[in-house]
Image (cartoon, rainbow, N blue to C red; front, side, top):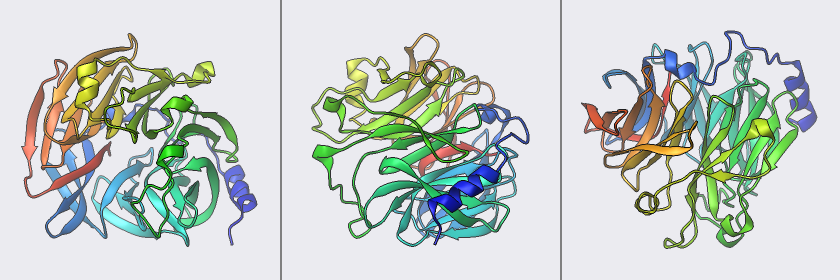
Length: 368
């Protein structure tokens, strides 16, 4: 049995100094991307270039969701959609798989993960199947991807996790929704949700800070996060309350300032209504100045200028969700109908490629 003490000993022995110089905006240097997909014959992931042209396809044993990418660009991990039962280690440049990680007993993968800066350990958001409690599973990349421990996320329904620019703090989006493996898609606590943004010390798993929405906004499930060049954390949410409620959907937490609350980004009411209470993905551009948030239900991507804290532009296309930075400060965007777009500075959505037989899943990641 893996105990928290054994997990902490592993964390304490891992170097958190970057091998290659960690940067929150490493995606700006890349021209290769990965996205999971579904098709008539099953599921897979694809690597494609900045023109949207597919370079390779790799089968997946079930529906994929998002990815963790090691800093050197030679290793990535594809995670199954929650409640997930596998993670697949692969080379994101060559498109070859090397290892399949099964979910631990009474644990489900929640679709996201992150590496330590030196790439030795990988953290995966997971849920305890019998209780719904959130944990970060810890995997040793140098020991056959053995699960060496776990630490609590101090909440339910953990989703996205990222490594902060200091290379020693993990930030986790706790969605706050109670679900169990015996009822995998049933939400059991909507009136009493407890979403939070949690900061953990990657060296020992200890809780650094926990930030919650105001009580009247407890039905805002915190799902996705992006980090700007100041180290502030942008939060994209999904509202589980009444459809007619007027609630903010995108927030900012000023972690460097030690803020104890969220600030909500401005959004015209017509845009907020159009998003239908649902954000699907979040990403910063290569400069770390512009934040993009997608809404597949709203058929749009909204982009904020994080220096001015103003909405800069809106791009519209059907069922758009996956977003990643392009080297020239634009964004790559994918949708569930097989299309790839480039979101331009003026909000234009230029079609790059069509793969009508594929349904791109929610998240795109710059790969190498």
